[in-house]
Every structure is written in structure tokens, then in C-alpha cells.
Image 1 (cartoon, rainbow, N blue to C red):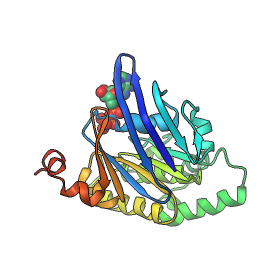
Image 2 (cartoon, protein in one colour):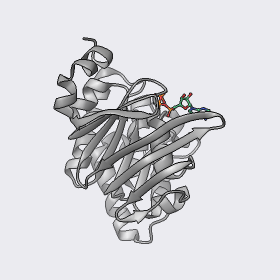
Image 3 (cartoon, rainbow, N blue to C red):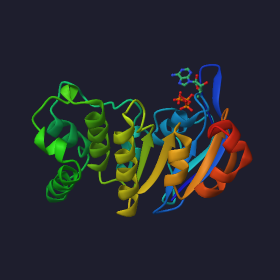
Length: 234
Ligand code: ATP
């Protein structure tokens, strides 16, 4: 479904991705793990059209989307749930969710998806008129996930959904992400919490300083001596 080949991206004189290749098959939950600064967020930003490619290609569902702008990428069915719960704090929960569906022209489908999001996250339903900025961290992360789902994406990109959340909420977050995939949406998940991501995913890629150094089923990476030593505490 998603095929990235030899992707090169950077910021000014910094080259963040140095020829990255990865594929995500339809229906899979794929994890991209690696240390701080390895280039995980940049990979997601490049897919979304937020960072231009300096080389290589990105194909999605048979189309070349390299260099496409963010709105076009979203229109093709890729939603991005960015790092740091970027909800609109001065807008209500309901308004934030409506924004997720702004490109859609099927009001009945949007209403059905809204009901689904509220069903999955009852706290958001209870607080639908509340300003998003007044929600707890976990609730804001749920809102960011709900907003991405409102686009009814074929592929959803999650950037560090566990960041800064209490351990019991993190567990729930990962269960929600697995459920999203099991319900038919393909997922590319970026995480610094390598163990949780590798346990959750089907396939995984390990990124080190802009290059993929290891890939395979999550269970294989968990058992890998280098991964264990460098990312799982031995
Ligand atoms: P993190 O977990 O910290 O987000 P990451 O693996 O997602 O790490 P990226 O954010 O993709 O890493 O960063 C990759 C490299 O690009 C790093 O060297 C980082 O300093 C650099 N970088 C990221 N964003 C910018 C920016 N806006 N301007 C300049 N350099 C940047």
C-alpha cells in the first residue's frame, strides 16, 4: 500500500533521512522505532507532504505521491496524527473532530464515523462542547486520534502517541491503535517506546541516523541482540 524508496529529506544543511526504504502492506500495523533524532517524525512528515523529498520516491496505493502537498495526500487517504497532541485548544471537541472530516462530502458517513469515535471514546462524547485545551493529556491524545479517524483514512500515521501519558493511559492508547488496525485501517506507528511498539505491530523497522538498519516481524526485532541491548535495556 505504501512504498518508500531511497528517501532523502532534510532541513537546511541537516540531512535527516539518508536513503530510507520501507513498505507497509494493506491491513498491517507497522512500527518504525529508533532513538531520539533518528528521523522517525521526518519520515511521517515526508509522507504527509510537510517536508519535501530531496531524493527517492513515495508511492501510495499505486500512485506516486512524492512532492504532493498535505491536502492532496489527505485526499488520497493518508491521515497524520502528529506528535504532541496538536489539537486546537480554543475549539470544542466536536469542532476538532469536524475538522478531521473537512475534505469529505458524505455527511451521512461523517455522522456515522462521529458516532463511532464517540462510542470508542465516551469521554470525548461527554465533553463534546468543552474546549479541547481544557482536556487532560490523555483525552487530548484520544481527540487527536479521533480527529485523524474522522478523515476515514486508508492509512493513518501515528507519531509518538504514548508521549507524556500515564502508564495506564499508554496501555489503552496502544489497544486503541491495535483495534483501529483490526477494523481495517492500515497503520504506520512511530514510537520511542520500542518494546510496546514491537509487541503491538506486525512488521517493524529500526531507524538509526536516517537509515533503516533492521526490519522484520516485531517478535524478530524483540529477540535481536542489537535491539535488546540498544533499545530494550539488555
Ligand atoms: P524525535 O523522537 O525527537 O522526534 P525523530 O526520530 O522523530 O526524533 P526527527 O524529528 O525526524 O527525529 O529528526 C531527525 C533529524 O532532523 C534530527 O537530527 C533533528 O535534529 C533534525 N530536525 C528535525 N526537525 C528539524 C527542523 N525543523 N529543523 C532542523 N532540523 C530538524
